[in-house]
Length: 428
Image (cartoon, rainbow, N blue to C red):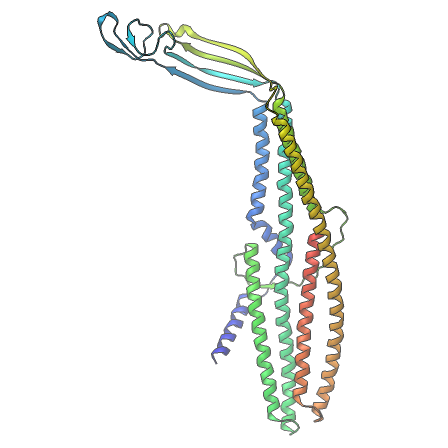
């Protein structure tokens, strides 16, 4: 009795929780993309790369204005004139303890420095192309993540549809058993069948009821997992639309999975170009202006400015550039190896999916033939039962086999759809 109450409660909860609001696969895929934190992360990285391009422009091309200053005091203990005293910033002295005032004396500097790079255009252009490549890498990562989400959500959605189909199958079996129960009741009353035959049908109804309950529980679990995967928090009653997937025909012969390796190669080459540009001559124009004094009398007379050029050119660096080039070659070989392995795996996955899809198609055709034979046998058995020539046990045995075949058929259909989803994922 407790088990009966439990199963009734589970079914009531499932029916109460999921109702008539129709939702399709596209709804869940779009919701998953919207709520994915990783996609938001990639989008933010792209925006950061765009901001980085403007920062590099400011570093290599635009001028810079700095406000700076320095105040230095040199205290001494003076004994000039036979009197000992502490001077916090002496300008001169002959008899004292402290730093040599001829070598170090207090001074004050306050002003600004304006600097304008004159040869930064090449370095900026190389750095700009590097940031564009890095932004393209993030965009490609976003595409890969969206593609992965589409596959994951599709697979979870198909599992929900499988449970839904099994529930529908249990309902159809219940209706068949109810019809047979009415027929058997009439035959029992006519003395053709025994009361135990009715008990057998009751047992089958209870077993079918348990299968339906298990399917509903699985449906509830899979749908809850689908909502979690997509970031859906509402508890609206839903009815999932059916979906029928087909292998997608690809026009582009090159897999888009290989795009990430092309971008990685470009990024390595761009890093090397930026590294080499530090060996180009660097020329900056600067202007300094402000106050600079070491004697604090007539401070106002020491306001001034100066200007000049700074030049630097790296002639020898201990062969750092050579080692950097060798590192790039190793990175390129590694990327090529990953690319070849990815191409191999991609082709093998597609071949495997196509081969298994063909086998599933053959098995589905065979099951269709079996189900047709089962229908014929059940019709003949029912006629023989009415004539008293066949027992209900034989009918139930065949019915059980048919139900199992129908469950296998539904499961095979879902597995084939999952294979199509996997093939479309790799054939991208």
